[in-house]
Image (cartoon, rainbow over all chains, first blue to last red; front, top):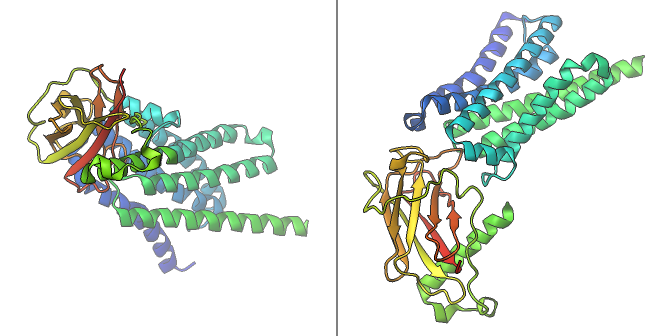
Length: 201
Length: 162
C-alpha cells in the first residue's frame, strides 16, 4: 500500500470522528449544561465514533495493523465501548433520573430512546458473549456477533440522528452514513470470505 | 407512541379550531357527545415538584408558554385555574427551583406565562405543564417545540372532575 493511501485512510478516519466531535465542542448548548451532562453527551459521541473503528479493525482495513493486532485492538475497543455507554447512561441518569428511567423501561416519550437502549443491550450482550466465545464455538459466536452488530449499528445511528443535542446535523449525518456503509461493507466482505472458504474446503 | 402523538395533535388541532371559530359552529356529530379530557403525556411529570409559587414571570423571561384550560364535555373555559410550568431553560435545569413557576387562567380559560428560553434537554426542546390543584383530575403535559429556535410553546388542558 502506498504511503499516500495509508495517510489518506488514517486521515479520513480521524476526520470522520474528529470533525463531529469538534463541532459538538463548539455547540452553544454546552453553556447551559453541567459537567456530568456534558461528559454523558460526549461519551455517546465517542461511542458512535468507536462503532466506525470496530469493523475496520476486524476486517483489517486499517493499514499498519496486522490482522492479529487489529483483532486485539478490536477487543480492547469493545471494552471501551461498554465503558463509554456506562458513562453515557450514568451521566444522563445523574442529570435527570426520571427521564433515564423512562428510557430504560421503554416508556419514554422521546422516539430515539428505545433505539439507543436496544443498541446498548446489544452491546452488553456482545461483551458477555465475547467472554464465552470459545465455549460457544466459532460459528455460533460469529452469527450472534454479526446479528447483534447489525442491531447495534442500526439502533445507534437512528438514536443519534433523532436526538437534538450538541452534535451538529451535517457532521453527525456524515459520521452515521460512514458507520452504516462500513458496517455493511465489512459484513458482506466477511460473508464472502467465509463462503469462499467453505466452497474451497 | 404514535397513537399518543396522534391524539395530542388531534386534540391540539381540535382545540385550536374550536377557539378560533367558537364552539357552536364547529361541533361535528363525532364531537357531539362531548369534549374528551386531556390525558397526561408520558414523561410529563418528570422533575415535577409540588407547590411552585404563582409568579408574574419565571426568571428573566423572553419565551412565552401559553394555552387554555377547559372543562371536559361542554368545553367551557375554566377561569382562575392554576397551571404549573417548568422546563430546562437558559437559566436552569428542570429540577432547579428557579426553572419552576405557576400562573392562573383568565376569564376565558387562557394562561400566558413568560419564562426563560427553553433549550433542548434529553434530545428534545420541550416544556412541562401540570394541572394539580385537586378540583379536577391531575394532568401532566410535555409539549415539544417544532424547532429549538421557537420563542413560544402552547399546551391545552381539558379537565374532568376529580
